[in-house]
Amino acid sequence: MTLKSGLLGLIAGAGLLLSTGANAAVVTLGGVAAGDGSGLTSFYGTTANFDTTFAAISAGNIVSGSSSGQYAAPNGDSTSYYTVGSFITPQTATLTLAGSSNYLGLLWGSIDDYNAITLHLANGGSEVISSATQPLLNPANGNQGPGGTSYVNIYASDYITSIDFYSGKSAFEFDNVTVAAVPEPATWAMMIVGFLGLGFLGYRKTGGASFRLA
Image (tube, rainbow, N blue to C red; front, top):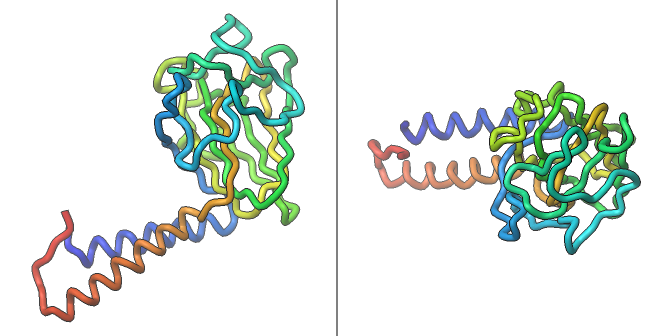
């Protein structure tokens, strides 16, 4: 890949993030090892791990292990976690936020097509995160193995005032919840493009012609 084509690709990707992030939540997958037996957590730390730190969620239960037909631990998670819809179905559990958080991260276990997250925003709008609105969450078939659990990063388009966790059946299991105020992915992308662009201009001034990106 040449530097020119690489820059064009980054610019196109950043433009896609900008156009998406301006009107809807941006969702990515991936996290870092929590180091406590719970699997993955957010790059931004953990707000609630349901063992030593907690969140004031209006409904649902803190559980551990698995119970057939009721709840299943997120893959690789041997600690306590949260479940919605295990004992009452359907069920909505709400977490109300204060401050200026625009990011939600959670270890989402055995993702199902009847699980959904609704972000209520300071601008009066809302954004729904489910397998129907976010294809990267598919296949949402309740897989309890390694392929069914993901650390999900959600970047809202405005400040989040409350979060609804909904499950239409048994159940919606999650752990290592993080809420934070962070830069949007598009902001990072444009910063990277800017730095590369400056580097490219500097390189052109030196008269180079064959430099390539690995």
